[in-house]
Length: 288
Image (cartoon, one colour):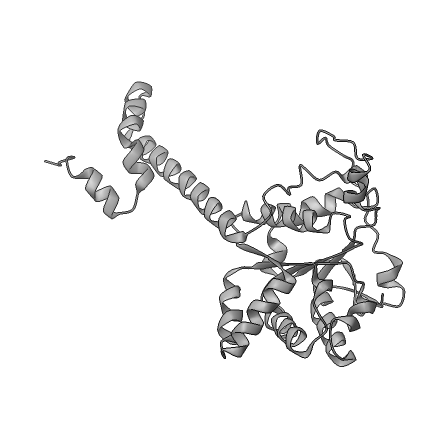
């Protein structure tokens, strides 16, 4: 005869925490509704999977260090009329591009919402159980410099491989020194075609020679980033400045008809355009 007295212990050993909590209550529901054994077992498994997904997403959210209040729902697209809401929602709502190790490059002046958009895309990926890690670029560079000093740079780069998407915020504030830009370039080279980068920058490509110490390294870094990339410019007056002046109207998020985002002339004026496997047009050699 099958004994149920040891069932809680067996479920604990099997690490079925949700089943252990719900099997008795679910059994009463099954008896009340006339479920057969397969329906009962299916309901328990579904509950277990749902709770595991919730715990995983909570863990990934904590590990991501993403700004908590920056979601798509809280971004006011009316303040950036040239920005395609549909395009941003597609990046946040599908993780296919991360499996292709594509990059997202967000350009614009300070205060226009680049960080908010990058974080919102990151939160969308986490909701799909994709691991994301947010960094202020200067802080990450300092960590990589320290790792290099201790001859652990390769280990540090490989530890970041567990995150399919890295967000490098305020990329343009990296100091132009051999030590800082060298480790930054090594990170870009390491992630090339193996992991996605989401970069925000207030500096167009033509001004990246202020970040990297020589033209050759600048061209090599840009080439790796744009080879498989979605490039978006956020063109608007500073949201923070308008908010300070009381010009921002608080709006309840509503459905907005998608508009087409045009890559700015500052990025594409002299850039030949190619098409990657997704069919999107992207500049091969951007200029500022």
